[in-house]
Image (cartoon, rainbow, N blue to C red; front, side, top):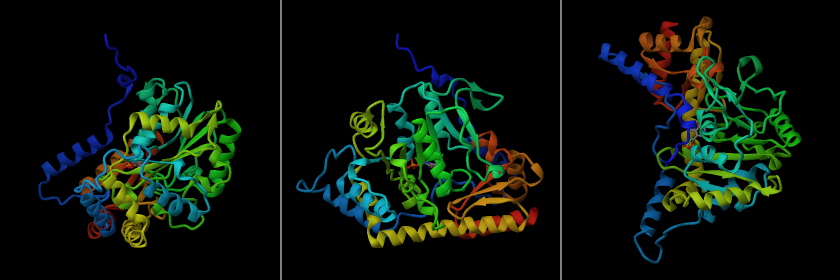
Length: 405
Ligand code: PLP
């Protein structure tokens, strides 16, 4: 008899976005004339930039002639993209990598979820709370999370590190040893960033304890403050303790195109094994490479024209986020994020529950947000708003919120 992976039976339902959709639909049914504006959206809305479109058109044309046709590509990605990444994303920031430390994929979600393949089941995992759910659920599927405690809304074997306004959104280094530590900066959902000093403390801790940091930098292009690191490898010592995940999704509107990459430095060695060699083995066995056409499109953001075009789109999302932040602050609310992130993280007024504040904004302002409690227990008392919407709709939504508060 084929036995199933029983860890899947322990997984709680992915309730957050389904519940938001249910409440939104119920409200719209009862109020058909209400013009609802979505500020909860975590997907990009702007089209691909012209440089990317042109590069992909050219790549499609190449596929129409036998002389230029491409079948299976290198599982690790094409050299033209890996080389461009090494030059533009790292060398410019003082980080020396070789192209074979960069693995192109179909996105950061796959890589964050798959990286656990090269680690033992009995590693102790630490995550921030609130958290991007993939880190937790993928470890739960692998049997690394223990049991799900419904009352605590937490897994018994995961070490949760609250990141709230009280600790400046920087997780405290655990007292008891942990083996795998997920950090995300700029952070989803809080929109906050870790400074060089804060990252340095984590890197030193990981090196002292032989832990591995999984550093998710999916939103690095949104960083506007000069001193904030875009890569963990800008911090001395990180190459011996960190794996970094990047994505073209929010950088270049690739949520529907699918492309990302993961950096595994050669210096990363545990129990005498090169993690770069292990990840290479994993990828060449289970992954057949990202699409040539998509990789050509991704490479176009490293041309001067493409870089300028994606920067403009990102500036638009950041401008929306600033409109939200300034507008909410003007109502006396405590607001975080937006400066280096498309996300705005807002404390609910007078200690209101995050679902109650969500309901109030839906029913009175007809604005959809995301309740912070959906990202983990320490997200209670916050809501997340995003700058990915239309600029005029964003301004209108903020006006409506101001009118009811
Ligand atoms: N990491 C974080 C923190 C995210 O918020 C997301 C997407 O929302 C991803 C990774 C996934 O990115 P990708 O679209 O490349 O799979």
